Structures are given as structure tokens and as C-alpha cells.
Length: 508
Image (cartoon, rainbow, N blue to C red; front, side, top):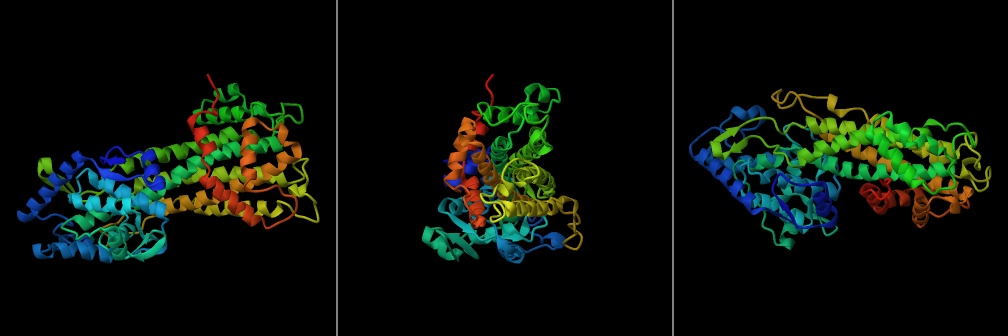
């Protein structure tokens, strides 16, 4: 059971909730804080104090005062009018993160909502009811207004949801799960949609998958080194220590450990003096790729436990403050930055694929074909990888440097953070395909060299991957192999956990 306090949510807890369906509930002390701030909202309404979004209109309408009798309609109208999402829906895993993060943000109590609203978010999460949330339509400031409005519809029994593998009306799903649709009170509609939970949810999923993929890429790059009889000297600890970048040293150390007992790697001067950069500079490049990934982790960790609502209620001081915590610039920068690490992981992998298939760059059969000429082998796999890498380069353009004014120029600078996050996840999915293609080619290359000569670690990985994609004995529809291996990489955890946990790190 994960207990929400609003301040302590971790990536491990997110994974357990989103992927293992672990249940979530509010901490008892959080309920006290939520109720105290809600009482402040109710009292300020009674006192006829003008408060943005509570008894005023929104955006450019902030100067329009709303009568007490219309406060519930104000919140309902807000959700209805802002549910303008466009395009394909987010995955159910992203939607689960959105539900969890929105509940966590409201748990600190500063948003002035009732406990029942936070519990409604958790009811949907714990029951596996996932509102259908279109991916497009957020500017990433004033909150992820459109996506979070679609999320809010589900709480009220409106819109469509995914429930037990079916797309059904939200009201039907809530009825089947024994959940009463929520009626929004003053402030609550605004509290649900003023926040960065769409971009942050996509960012969390992207980070978790990028971390796994980069570890896998190191292991696959090591196998490629065996297929090309790469020179291990370039991974010497002293060489990397004198430069001083810890991520670079860590990658070099993991590669040395992975290949410690391999008979397929070579020494400097045995076959050649030095390898091409895509082999020799694996620690420098992949080490640098860890930097934006770790930066994104830091910023996402903060944002997962952040209060991003407007206005905020401080009951101990009996005040309501309008601000801009909903602005997504910190996450927009983080997601644009992580895109660089994702892009380069695939970029250098594609160059290793080229070295594996190009007969002018190795002594392997041309394009790893079992019958070169009659059969094309891995020729077009490299084309596909090159296409994905090129597409990544266009997606890597920073979304965060763009801004278009909205709400009659009241909201005159926005982050485009949700676009940055969506592009980062798309790039991650492209890159996983590229790394899968490298693994297919690396496995074929080590077969020509002799799998008995592989290191213990790479051979174990080879044998598991061969259960997914068999050896290339003749041309076949390789799209099936790429898809199957890509899916395996997404689900495979053993090598990732072992690398992350340090088993592949050198001792001492």
C-alpha cells in the first residue's frame, strides 16, 4: 500500500502503483490539512472575499465576480469548456500516473479541495478506471488545462474511460465499481486542472523507460564490441579517471565488467590500433547521455511532490495567493534536455549497426546475410534505424523555446512542456526500435565469431534474446523480429535491474 502525503512520492512507488496496481490511500495527517484549508475557502466565501477562480471567472474573465448561487456551475462549466483535447489518447499507464500525481499534489491541502475529491481520484486509480485523455491541446501553462479537464470528467461520471479492457462511458464504469460520481464544489474544478500533471506523467514514464533503455544499450553495445572484436583498452579505468566525468567512468566500468571474461574482444595493436568512435567513445557518449536523464530525474522528483495549483490556500495565515506554480517551464526544460540523451543513445547505436552490416567496415558477411546477394540480410534494418534516428533529430527541436499568448494576452507566456514531454516519449519509443535492431545485428555477428567465446554476461543475454528472435538463416519478414524484440526490451527487467543494482559494477 502506498500512502500519499503530498511530499514523499518516489519513482519506485509510482512504478508499483502504475505497473503493479498497488493500492493507494491518503495519509491520515494529510486529511487534517486538506480539511483545514477547505474550511478556510468556505469561510472566505461566506465573508464575500473576492478570490480568483473561486468566485470569479477565469483567465481574462478574472475580474468578473460570480454569485454564490452559481459557484458550482462555475466549476462544472470550467471542466466542460476546457475539455478540448485533440488526437490519440494517452496510454493507460500515463493516465494512471496523472491520477496519482494529481491526487498527490492536492494532498498537501493548499488547493482548498475536499478530502472526498482526492479520494475520488484514488477511487478511479485503485479501481482501474482510466479516463480517456487526448494527448494534444495543452500549452503547458495555466496548467495542463485540456488534458486534466478530460481526467476530471471521469471523476464526475462524464466522458469515456477504459475499464477492464473496454472503452465505456464513465458513468457506467463508476456504477460497476460502486463509485458515486463527484459533484464539484467551489474551487474544485480549477484545482483539478491547474497543474503540470500531464507533462509530468509523460515525463515520469519517459524517464523510467529511458533509464532502462540506456542500461540495455550499454549491454548491447558490449555485445556489438564482441561481434566486431573491439579493443578493450579504450575502456581502461585510468584513461577515464583523468577526464573526471563520473558518468563516463561508470559506463566504462560497466562495459569492462560485462566483457571481463570475453574471448572475442581484442587488445590494442592485435587487430588494429584503435576502433571507430562509435565503439571507442561509448563511455564518453553514453556517459554524457546519462547527464540529461539524471537531470530530468531530479526535476521530475521535485515536480511529483509539488503544489502546482492557483490560487493557493494558506489556512494558518487565512490568506489566498494567486501565483503561477502551474507554469511548466521547469519540466519543459527537463524534457527538452532528456531528448538529447535519448537521441544520442539511438544515434550512436545506429552507427554501430552500420559497422556491423557494412562489409567495407568489417570482416563479417555482407549485411550479415547467410547468402549475400541472393539474400539481403540486415541491409534494410539499417535503413529503418537510420530513418528513426533522423526522425528523432526533428523531434529533438526544443519545444520550450516556443510560446503563443492565450486568453486575450492575460496568459502571454507558456511553456509548451507537454509537447516537449510527448516528443521525448516518442523519441524514446523510436530509440528502443534502433537498439533492438542493434541487438539483432550484434547477435548475428557473435554467432559468426562463436558464441562460446562470449562473456558470461553477454552470452546469457544473447540466449534470452534468441528466445525472442531466432538466428537469421534466410531472409524473412524482419519487421516481426524488430517488433518482438522491441516489446521484449520494454518488458525485460533482469539485465536492467542487475545493472542498476550494481551487480555488473566492478567490485572495490
